Image (cartoon, rainbow, N blue to C red):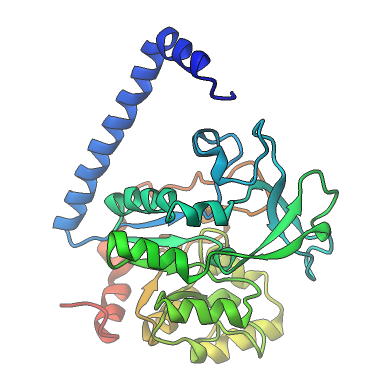
Length: 328
């Protein structure tokens, strides 16, 4: 656990077969994934990956590169990641994940982050960076704190990290997950780096919402919903009559096929990329829910059992052509 040389040498010798087996699995995974990506490319399909900003305390990264995280000499957490108090969470959120030691990372010219992004760009054509605002500033909570309210804002690496990444890797096909409460400095950083942000039409309720269709800009990626929201049909059923009227007004729909109304609004928007979950393409309800945030059971189990008949998706083909988002 402490990476003592003698202990590591003994483990490498005694666990040689097990280590070799896992090395073999990773090699096979890499080979098969790259074959998948080449096949997708031949079909003109791009793979869109997602990279979490933090890693787990018991991850190999935190164990192997302890000095790059806010850990003490024994590997114990000295501070953890989380979110400050807000209207929905009066005590804030404690995620329990180790924070980066950004000055130490800067001294290495961000080598660990460069290696991390390099591997993901081998696997994906496009990458979404989760919790992008944490790279501008992050909420630091003392280890052992009872609530996240004991934390404080600390400066992140900002543009310096991305300058290091681009110097080594060139152009970066990134998308910033900038949902939630985003301050002006975070928005300024995103625009400075020319990284598109996210807009989710299910969040368009409210006069001040930046997710309203008429406020979406070209430097955005627009979604009808995400893996953390219900399918549009299930979501629409939970709305109040006033909220339903707002959605119908924003989309010009009649409330009978709201999933298609939001899809139309997304594809008609100036956003450079529009993403529709398969559940919304098929018009599924609650049975198509992917993930329920804050719960630990029954998530990530939805699968597309069979490819839909062409008659079920003809509307999408016609819509992509009408909105000039298809080449033919």
